[in-house]
Amino acid sequence: MKKILIATDVWKNINGVVTSIKQLKEGLEKRNFTVKIVHPGEFKNVPLFTDPDIKLAILGRRKMEKIIKEFSPDYIHIATEGPVGFAARLACSKNKWKFTTHYHTQLPEYIEIRTGLSKNAIYHYMRWFHKKSEKTMVSSPMFKHLLEKKKFKNVALIPLGVDTNFFKKNPEAKIPPDLKKPIFTFLGRVTAEKNIEAFLKCKLPGTKLVIGEGTALKSLKKHFKNDTVFTGCKTGQELVDLLSISDVFVFPSKTDTFGLVILEALACGVPVAAYNVQGPKDLIKNGVDGFLGPNLEKNALNCLKLKPANCIKKALKFSSAKWCDLFIKNLSRI
Image 1 (cartoon, rainbow, N blue to C red):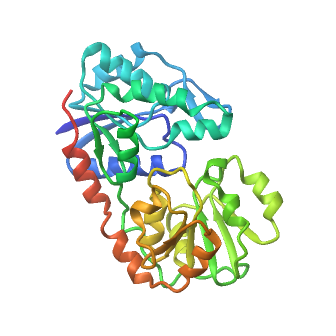
Image 2 (cartoon, rainbow, N blue to C red; image 1 turned 90 degrees about the vertical axis):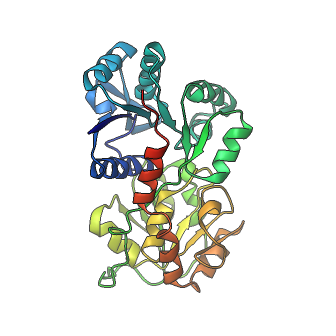
């Protein structure tokens, strides 16, 4: 049985990165891998000052090195660039262990949005971090091109996948009495970089639905409480049912590298309205399973004309099984 250690700075959170790692873990275990997830919860940690839900581990290279040696993996994959990932990267470099990395999110852009710190300085760190990786995995063609333009090496395209056995339209899902059709839905972390305000400013009929929690939730509730329903975090069948009763999925982010929630919505037969940027641009076919363009409101209204079957067809092309197989193919033994 092969063994893989995955180092990540997010694990107990609910976000696309965590969802993808959990799917990956399940897929690897089905393929007879023993998987060890090294995350901040295993160490002393402190909350990130810009987002208390994210914990920063307090650890050094020596402790990470001990963890790796005791587990003795065949493969090491570093999923994030925070303290846990940093310690794993240092341990691998010291011991000349080969490893792969994942570039999940536009961290430089997110840090600039939240703190005002120049993204150029963060890109310098990111290039150093991924420089020794055998493969830096990314989820979309546009993002691969962007990183290569920024002088990143060994970038491999590994599109994420969705569990279409779980995310599928439930025709029996009931519409809560406080939701009027048509239902325009956002799902994800409720934070500044997700640009949710652009969605909530749209003049749309029916109901605007926001599923998720985050640092921007309190402010958005205050300013849009009269025409938006905020459900908080939803998981499992309850989440699938909310997607199933939705008519349009609105994805206002301009900074996501992929947008796993887009696939989850499509798998439930919900067309996607978004800007014509990386992430949505790599997934949506304009006028077939969604609409892309500079006018988010117009895109959302146009989506009401689209067929759910086209959306499901698109999601089936991005199965979690295909993603896991491609991930394994790009690993390197330590």
